[in-house]
Amino acid sequence: MSIGQVMIHVTSLDVAKKFYIDILGLKVKSDLSQELGMYIIENEGCYFTLHEGFKPNTQDYDQCKTVVILRVSDIEQMKSKLLSQNVQLYGNIVETPVHYYQSTRDFDGNWIEVAQFKN
Image (cartoon, rainbow, N blue to C red; front, side, top):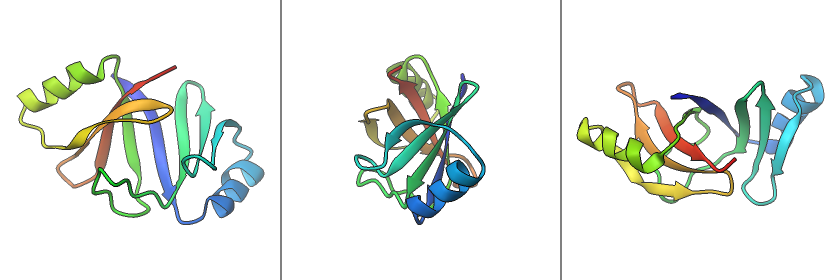
């Protein structure tokens, strides 16, 4: 397993773009601002995502919080492993244009997604 993506939830995608992309100079890999309200930035194999105030219908995420996304090669296998270890899962596996993911939380309540990326 490796860190596949770090998602930063922001209240304004325009303000975040000005800071992270225009000022800091991070390069956009995928502009999904119209479809999903996000920019995906790749840095040496780890994706960094800016996501505007996202609260998916299927997950009970708190608004504008960080989500750590862990890259796995087989999402179904990882889901089975988590269930066998009595890890509480939230919702079902979700498909996005970028990946398939399953949500859980760590013991402090931080959101974790295990994700099988499409590319």
